[in-house]
Length: 396
Image 1 (cartoon, helix red, strand yellow):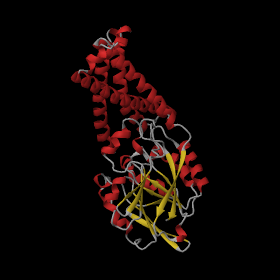
Image 2: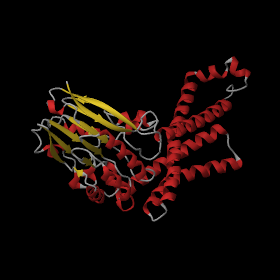
Image 3: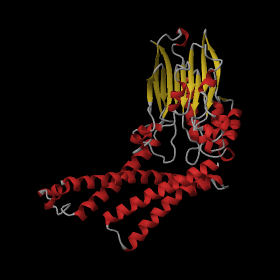
Image 4: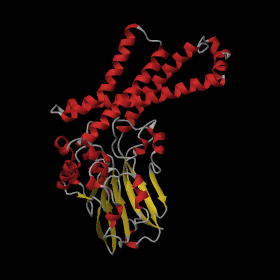
C-alpha cells in the first residue's frame, strides 16, 4: 500500500502541474477576470483534489453508493482534463508554429476572416482556439463515456498454428483482462461478463491480471460472480501490477476461494483428448520490485510442462515476451495496455509498448494483447473498445 501511496502522491503532483498549466493557458485565451476568474481556479483546485479524495473514500467506511458516485465524477473529470490538457498543448504548438512560420500573419489577413472581424487579431485567435479546444474536449469526453458503457463486445480471434496437434484444432480459450473492480466498476458488471463467458463454452478461461483496484476487505464480495464461471478445464489467473498496489496476498487468498487456479511462476498441464496443453503463468513484470518472492520468472513457469503439444504463457504485460521467447512457449496472452484506452493514450502507449493490441508474432512466438474488459481511472474509451476475447486455435 505504501508503494501505491507514493504513486498517488507523484501522480497527483504531475496531474496538478498539468491542470495549472492548462488553466493558465485557457485564462489567457479566454481573458477571464473578476468573479469568473475565481470560479475558474476554484474549479481547477477541486478537480485536482478529487482524485486523492476519491482514493481516501475507497479506504474508509462510507456508503458504497456515495463512494462510487464521487469516484465517477472524479475520474470523469480526470478524463476530461487529460484530454483538455493534450488539446491545449496541441493548440500552443500550433500557435508557436504559426508565429514562427508566418502562417499566423497569413491567416489573420485572409479576406473572408476579416469580413467576420474574427481571427484578424491575436486576441480573437486565442479566444476562438480556447473555446474550440474546450468544446472538443467536452465532446470527446461525452463520446468516450458513452463508448465505455456500451454493451460489452465479444471479439473472436483465430490463432493460426503450424503443426498444431489435430485434437487441438478448435480448442477455445476465453480471455478477460484489466477488469479493474474498484472505484467505479463493481460486481454487477462482472456478473454480466461471467454470463457472457459461460455462453461461449470455452475449454478454459484466462484472467490476465489487473482484476482489482482496491483492498480485498472492501471489494472481495464484488468478485463472487467469478465463482460461477463454467469451462471444461477451469479458470486460470495471474497477477497484474494493480494487484500489487491493492494487497496482492489477500487477493490471492480470496481468488483461490472462488475455485480459480492462481499461477505464480508455475503451470498446469491439461489433457484434451490425446493432446496436452501447458498453461503457464507469470507474476507481473514489475512484481519483484514490490514483493521480492514474486519476481517474474517465465523459465520457472514452464518447468515440467516443456513437452506438451502446445504451451501458453499468461503474462499481464506484453513486454514479458522478451524474457519468455526461446523458452518453448507457443502463445502469450497479455493485457495491461488497454489499447491506449482514450486520447492521447492511443498514441502515447506506443512509446512504452511494442505490442499494444491484437494478435502479433515475435520470433517463434505468437502474442495476443487484450484491450481490456473494464477500464482504469476515467470511465472513457475512445478508439480502444473493451473486450471479452474468444481465442480459437486453428491448424494451418
